[in-house]
Image 1 (cartoon, each protein chain N blue to C red):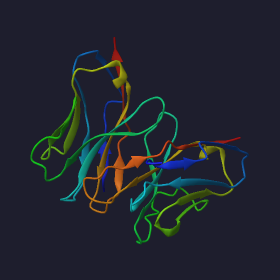
Image 2: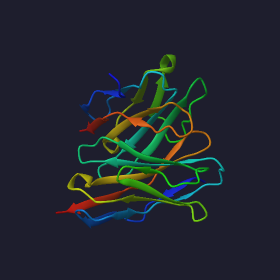
Image 3: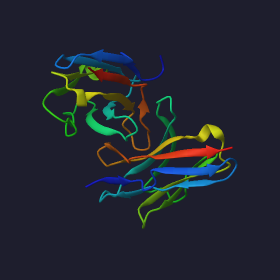
Length: 114
Length: 113
């Protein structure tokens, strides 16, 4: 497809389980971002990949969160030992990385921790 | 530190009237970009309009315009002739010199018939 693709669209899991969220950015986009959005709230920055540079991980809330981007394309956000406060919508965005270029967002993964 | 402030958690506007959504930002970068996104209740984030820090003219995209006042560090979104479909959350965002984005807390706009 032409847009940013995220999977799964919904994930329900038990507290303590690990989850993997996937993001497939727009082809050719060098920048990829992960955000977390709780209900009715703004976007919380998690991590940012730009080309081959080291990612900016400054927004990851704890060491239970990690992300990788393989081959400069697909990215996976992993949450280990999930907690109830991890419940949120996780949004991925990509951009061309040039000034003036907006981020294009996926539809998000709605994560619910029971 | 980079920061985006949206001071209006909620706004009401009558259909067909214009509305201004406020956004102020804080940065020491000389080169940056300002963006507005719309998020309807369905959840998708829709890019509306962009203003570069060196752009001298205010950006316009159809019914959207960005009132850029660089000295005041404000980038207000103006929606003209509001429509019922404009009811949504609106987020102001800034891109810094390292291509990292910062988002405001959002303004929920309700358009009344």
